[in-house]
Amino acid sequence: MGAPTRIRVKVQADDFDVARLQSSLLIGAQEEGAVATFTGYVRAANEERQVITLQLEHYPGMTEASIEDIVSQAALRWPLLAATVVHRVGKLSIGDQIVWVGVASSHREAAFSACEFIMDYLKTRAPFWKKEFGPEGEHWVSARQYDSSRAARWQEDNAL
Amino acid sequence: MLKVLFFARVREQLGCSSLELHWPEAGTDLNELQEQLCRERGDAWREVLTQVNMIRAVNQLVMEGNCALHDGDEIAFFPPVTGG
Image 1 (cartoon, helix red, strand yellow):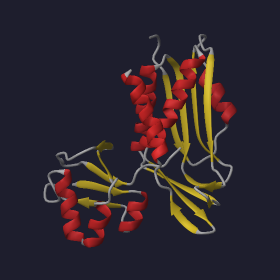
Image 2: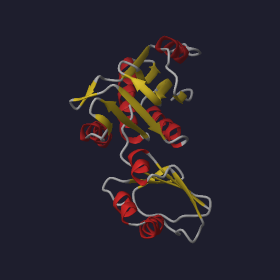
Image 3: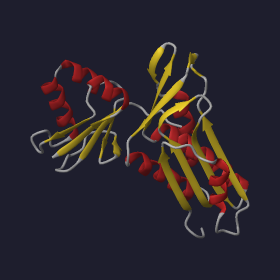
Image 4: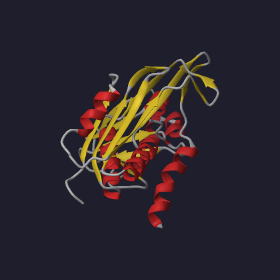
């Protein structure tokens, strides 16, 4: 593998500009042939509960370190040139951007796979917690089996 | 000293976000620390800290089982994560 993957991780209260994040992912390398990105938004309903706002809590220090670890694992599995993860915390409303993952590689397969891997692991490993506020009151979001299964899938792939 | 942190639902249920405890009196391993918190702070704490799926981290690394604690360690208790 060539140069080390340029990894950037940011946990912030402020909104982010997807276009700017994507262009900053590209600066520097000539061999980039593919960028895959994922943007997560606040949904108006979760498990049939109406959501007005979300409060996102994290574990300062551990959250950043765990995302860096996840991205580093992705960089060991696929030849990545650069990867950026931005995750928001604090109070968010319907339609707000929560998370952005961008991965640059020479080819699309690595970029698509690494982007999905990072999101699947972020959802099950990075210490963030969502609390919903809606007409029925407050509700801590429960971890879903679906997310654990998605993340476990990568371990099965690895074993093959 | 040991720094003990509680997050999200666990923090709300305990009404406590952090504690500073003397080492080694507070516990020389993770299970001992948890048991002492449960014993000294009562049934409400025991009920919360022994919930299934409780995640325990030492120095910001998730621990699957017990581990030794040392002076200056940071311990955290939190529920399964729900970011993204």
